Amino acid sequence: MKEFISRDFGRIFVIAVILNYPWERTQSVLYRAEDGNVIPWWHCMLASLGDGLLVLIIVGVGWVLFGHPVWFEHPGVQGYVLMAVMALAMIIPIEWILMYRVEWWSYTADMYLVPGLAVGVSPIIQMLLLPPLIFWIVALWRKELS
Image 1 (cartoon, rainbow, N blue to C red):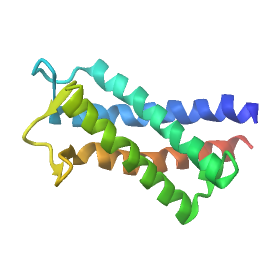
Image 2: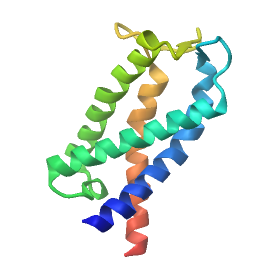
Image 3: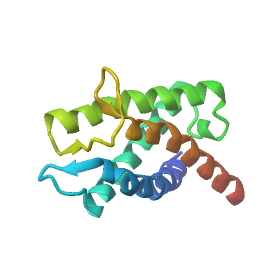
Image 4: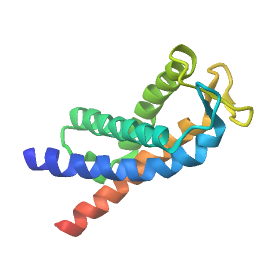
């Protein structure tokens, strides 16, 4: 158990940050910083670290619901539904709060918004696509090491 937490949580986090950073950099042209400037690289790195934490939360919730820490190795329909529901339940309010309450950034006219939510489509797609990819990579890595 301790080995999983120290080794595999670390792997999941590192892979999540590595995969999220290019996405954050690519979509950064759809945002403006609070001063109106382009989002700098280090904002994207901070966002990637936050994305890594969100992925760890998905792992933890799956662990509790499915009763084992490596549920993501063979997620099945329930696992993929959990990933999608958790991703949406986290990213929509986070994006909305950081956009409209904290005002850390604003969207450019090029960002497509979800009707009725006024939240960007790109970060939602990011959180729907990347966690399954991250878990697949970690599952392969675990298989190679065993």
